[in-house]
Amino acid sequence: MKDLEILLENKVGQLARLGKLLGENNISLEGGGVFTVGDICIAHFLVENANKAKFTLQSNGIKVLGINGVLILKLRQDIPGQLGRFCSELAEAKVQILHQYSDHQNQLILVVDKPLVGKKIADQWMKTWWGGQEYSI
Image (tube, rainbow, N blue to C red; front, top):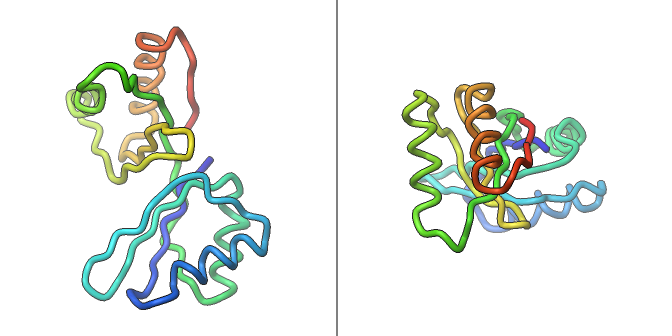
């Protein structure tokens, strides 16, 4: 899975257009969100085939700003403070979180500035809290 960073105009129908184009090309969005600042919207969506999604959108006039690796992990919903604990571990290792959202399985999706360091921390987190499951970037 990869994070697709997309620039949209802040006007009616842009997200509908994006979703329709991707759906017509059999590209599923597995999580993400859209964030508006002034006249622009920055969208981040989790996709399986980021290159196909990028090509589809750019071929139809939608600007893709980048394709990013992601950390994917599960927080324990039954234990308050999990997000703070995990993010503190990243901060202690000087890993900056650039983007954060959730996927359709309620997993935490992060784009970070130091993906290899972040992966080590995420893998250790999963071993500690979930008994060993590792995730890739």
